[in-house]
Amino acid sequence: MSPLLSPPSPELDDAQLALLANYAKHLGRAPKAIRFALQTGERRSRQKGHGMEMLELRAYQASDDLRHIDWRVTARTGQAHTRLYAQENDHQRLLLLDLSSAAYFGTRHTFISTRFIQLAGIIAWRSKQKGDTLSYRMTYGREEHASNKSGTLPTLLNQLKEASQLKHRADGSNPNSIWSNGQLANTSLIGKSHNKDVIILTDKQHWSASEDAALMQLAQHNRVHWVQIFDSNAYNLPPGQYPMASHRGIQQITISQQSMQQAKAAFLSDNARLREKLASMGIRHQLFDLTESPEKIARYLLSQGALH
Image (tube, rainbow, N blue to C red; front, side):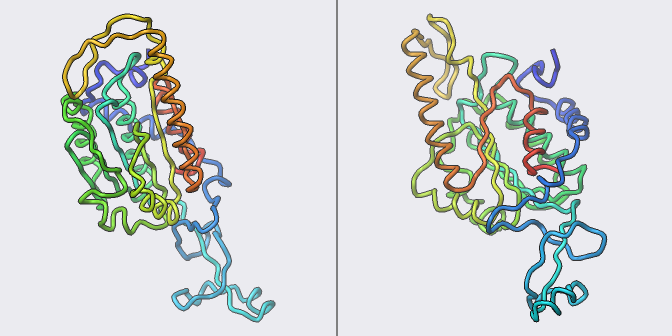
């Protein structure tokens, strides 16, 4: 079996994180129509110049470069218009990784936390390879890290390695959402993010109603992609007693067919509400099973224009 799909340990080391660079390099390319597709009220990173893909034609603004006035349209309409261009190798990306204590679990191949961390590593390597600007914030256990500086790939990889450590399962989960209510959330990293591809990686399905406004603001000014990973096999375990590890330690859990059905129904119901809420904000949500490789999930993000 592929070491990417089923690593030797859910705790990743430097060598495993370094190997993700090769998978990132061979993801392929997103279709041009996807890369430059825009939603209402959304703007891609702009760069004015010749020989690049034209992004839009709009009325002249005082800050525009006079060299890029479209004189034909200006003469035809009687109003000055400017051509704006999209520079393919200058994309702004914000990665938000939020792991609950329940993510440090899995019945096949590896843990949910490990799959998220592998995916985050591929995103980080791909951004570096394409020359994209990557900011990030991550929370796991009691830890919270963030950066909006360039050249932080080694630091990010070290933090991802630390995030894979199973000791964080015992620390519980950060009750705050990753986009608000943290000491780092009101800085320019998130509070002032505009014109970025925002990738949210989390197993969480709930947040307080008071945090809706912050998420709506993030989605209003950026294109947000929400990736969720779950273990479908966890709802198909045979009846019996199982030792389960959580932040409360090892406990013996009795599982019956009825309890499995109830747990699955509750998850699907919560997930349907989550999907509906995110859709109302214009956020793209995709649910993946633990058995799917991080390379496949990264290719999905590529097809949606979140990666390039």
